[in-house]
Image (tube, rainbow, N blue to C red):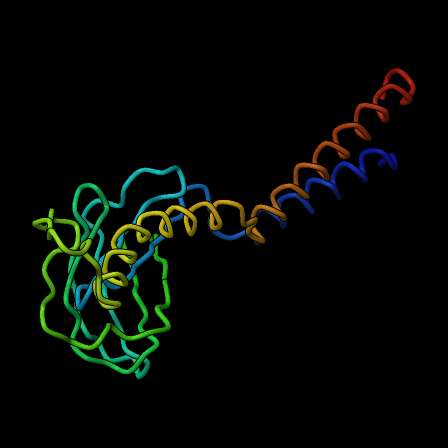
Length: 195
């Protein structure tokens, strides 16, 4: 057997081994993001291509691993629930049942229950003497409500930028495979006729 054929066989065996050990593809990864809106835990789940995670199981766990709440995502990928009190950090787990699973950790606990403030977004009657002002709790609630979707999009974009080990191994497999093909073609050109 010629050296070129041995090199081709070695490259083919190596590529097969790389593909066998590469693990599952990450082409359709799932992401989840959650935040507190008052006592409500709200969030959304989406796949790496931007499509919503419709009907995915959402589980909220306390620091001790105890289940604090469960729900399913809507067709738009969003979810909302009031979890039982648990020790932070809270872990939000999304699982679509098709092998896609992701976690998001909330470092803080929900804000302490206070007297329900009026909806800060609703128009307030104008006072003739002074402009309307917000309490700190109302302002924090408003900011969480408005910034939540923006934070979710930032998390999704950050997760989209990650390169998994499987993608690195796959890329190396392509490089090795192309190198093997080039060696094989060179070996065919240099082989004497009749072999």
